[in-house]
Image 1 (cartoon, rainbow, N blue to C red):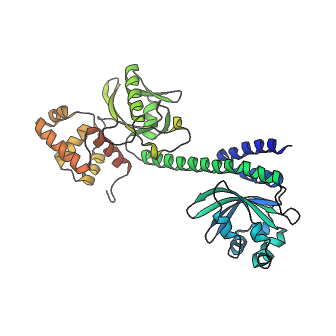
Image 2: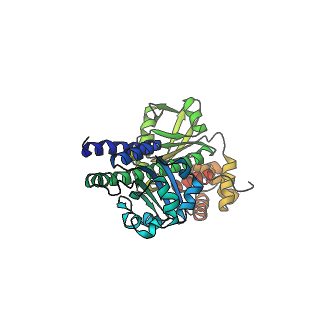
Image 3: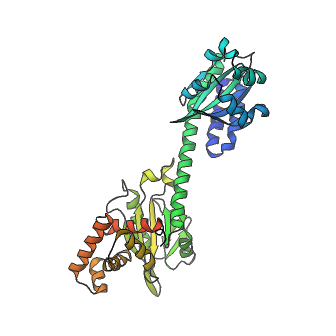
Length: 379
């Protein structure tokens, strides 16, 4: 097969590793065979240690972790390996073909017993304290990498680098989503993570129960909707607006009521999730907004009490906070609490100052963030 055809096939296999990391062994095997090498591995080089994965044709006796660490401490190639940049192709010929290398403990106890004579490596990924290489071991009969083989390695190198970057992005995304998911799972209210078009990426147990009893919300082909069409449109508009915020600060977000037959409406608060907290490859699947739903009739005094303790709110300020989070404006809250509008505004200003917020929307978001962070120690 011409090397061009081989490269195209290998590039496809490289990107398959982004989704299925177990396929790295197949990639290593195919590159080893295409370059007429003897063996290969993906190796992470640190300052004082090495870790090897995706092995092909490595003697098990030398693949053992303790054996590798002992050899790495005497490896004259280690410093060269750590200096290779992501996407670079290098050989170790300038070291392996010297008399000093052939007299080294590493060569005589590790390299020569496996019938290795040289190495060729492709930089896959660089971090501050580690370098990941795809290393091919060359035999004494094929020390030099022939021009077509070298060209193949140079062709594959940027794709190996990009595949590693994509894998890192996916790993970070999963960690972030898992972290957000864990936080809202523990929250004492219904919580959803939504894309810009209201596809549900995550729902905690209370949110799932809310959708299963569709008195106010339902899920249609993965998209969240309200039982009333007008409410669905209002909810979608809030989510779209949140998704288009450049950050998650200030007065971003919004509130709407979710009517339900024979009961007090639920209150839905929508807030943006900053893009830098949800880095992904495909922005269409990025969690763009968080939706928190509370039932004013159910009461949430314990969570409000924790919030009040956390920020030093007075009892009167805590009562106003409950009304604000329950979707009441200051005028209605003042009437419900039996205080004047001036007193309500004073309490609100005190709450804003104590919580470091600048308005009701930001205060409500701070309340939910605090609730997801969990109770104070010993609370």
